[in-house]
Image (cartoon, rainbow, N blue to C red; front, side):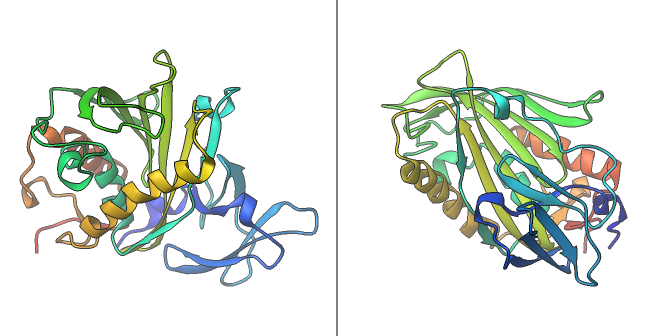
Length: 281
C-alpha cells in the first residue's frame, strides 16, 4: 500500500500535558516512535532508528511526522479565542482504519440509532438536505447547513433542540466539527477528532474540544464525549471491509452520505491511501 502521500502529514502522537521525561512509546504508520519531554521541557519525538522527527505542539497535543511536512498544522481560529474551555478528552484505541474513524465522525445518519436519546432519537431520523464542497483554496472538505434534532446536544444543553453543524476535513486523519453552542447562539462549539494511524487497521483517536461552557465540570465534559465515542467504537470495529473503500461502486451511498463521498473523492485525489482499499475484492 502506498504511504508516500500521507508520510509528509502531521499526526497527533500524545497529549502534551501528560508527557514526562520517561515518554510515551507508541507507533506511527507502523513505525515505533518515542514521544517525551527533553531537558528543557520541550516535546521531542524520535523514530525507531533513533532519528529525530519533526515536532509541533498545537491544540494541547504533540504532533509529529515520519516525513517532512510541507505546511503548518491546519488552523483552528477558535483555539485562540478568549473565554473558551479547552478539553483534552484523552485517547481511545480503535481496531479500524484511521480513515474509517474520520468517516464515521462525518456521518450524521447514525445519530438516532447509535447515540439514542443523546445526539438523536427516533422518529427524528431523516437527514435534511445540506451542502458539501471541496474548498479548493484551503484544500479542505466542508459540509454546511447540516441540521439535526438532538435530545441532548451538549452537556450544557437543557432539553431537545435542533442543532446546526458544520463539518470540516483539513487533513486526511483529522476532522473538525462546529455545532450550535447552547449558551452562546452566536458562536460555535468546536469538537475535533485527531486520529493517529498506528497501522492501516488500528488507530488511536484523540478527541479535543473548545467550548463556551462555564458550568459543567471538566470530568463531566470528558465523560460525555468519551461515552459518545465508545458507542462509535463498537460500530467501527465491526465494519466490513475494515479498510475504507475508495472505489465508488463498493458501497451503496444514500443522500446522507454526501460528506463521506466528498471525503473519499478528496482522499483519492491526493493519493491518501494508507488505511484505504482501492479496488473491490
